[in-house]
Image (cartoon, rainbow, N blue to C red; front, top):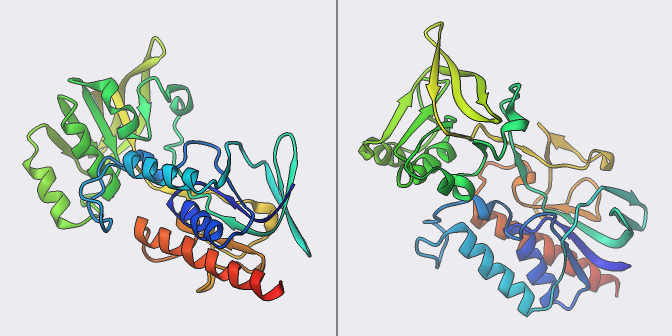
Length: 301
């Protein structure tokens, strides 16, 4: 099957690109391996997106899904195994078929970074999570921990504080990487406790479920009994190494048109190297990539 454009990744950047391409009557396919909306589905409340007052991430994702369905954008829910670039085409390899396109947009986003501790993979879904919005309700009126030092960790701690009896933030630094207004909100919550300069050493299990966390503070190991732990220590961009794109710390380098070092491959959203990672500029990047491709296609036709 041949397309004008294939978009890999169904977050806000990829969906925006699909909207503009479909409006321009281009043959476009959007591929997403999980739920459309990407990282939106892990955001409890969005307060700074124009025209949306305190909308939840999943609600915004649903609105975007309804929009592209109404436009009849073709969506494929599957995993891309690999991508191969040739002179006149890009080949997107799936489990059961190969898809061909002239232009490709990578909107693959980032994957949550792991602690790389012994029981981590085993405990996912058994007390360990990377998404408070997804799994916080499982720990209603129970004690949980959030591991991280950034804005995301604090926002999720605030969300959990309204569900759980106690939230302990484990921060390996003596400061937080965030805005002052979030710290003020944290200070108002009586059931949020912060452990500064504390390094998580192990995730301890009992009968297959998380029992506690062992952390190191002041050269002394301590144990924290919790039912759940939510990890927010950053993310790693999801790239296809075989494409040999120009990278900066694994983030794809693009020009002002969102074009990579390969002139038929574009990248948008959290997978690219940039100064600010926000929903509004991710959407803008999707639009820029799409309009740049539309101009190229129209010029050759």
